[in-house]
Image (tube, rainbow, N blue to C red):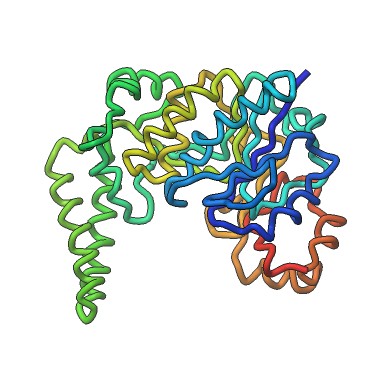
Length: 322
């Protein structure tokens, strides 16, 4: 029988949201933990974590020892770790007893919303510069070696070691546009000029990343107990080298697991309240109109009339809802 630990992950310290979220999941999940940055309170199921929200993969890594101790004290072993964002509203019909059946997910598989081979997104140049070799950080012998990582990506049919010329050209043209637009703003012009220089240098090189990376959204995850220790080790290593979370978590999962299910393969789909993927997202104006007219920004009304084919809605800012 599966024993699921629900981990609610907070990007920032919002102590006031803890009782609200507890109420959402009460009676649905028996083992609820909150991963709260810099928490100083007395709640026994809140795990204090210490890291920038840009590297919140470290939150999961830091929580593992606490969760293992809880296993010992509570008896039994967690079979899965279900990680959700604090501003995500899960379908109210989902419980620890029907999670895998509702999702159509086998219990030997990990889950992440998506994995993007086009990992250079929105003019991002950071992956071009990222290296696991940093002064004062000894992770080179902890993470898989370059060729081993490439083989793991090939196992999943991922092509990530090189950047496609067409994508680099698009990044360069975009940077030129924004650099020109920022002529009257020295800081903005310097920012985009720097990006442009990096991209041009990279374009004339071999376009090979220093370490293989993939991108993906990390707002909701399911990690099996078998994968969790190695996944956390890699997450911690990537946090120590300042890798942005939306590269770090997908890459760590690819490197540590042998079976991954993506959101597009599930029976229920996520509803993102931002323009991310057209088939599962809607624009902000449309959302506001629906929330105003249909739910009157009332959480209770939304839960009572939650879209049946939807796994979650994200983000739901609790401070904006009654």
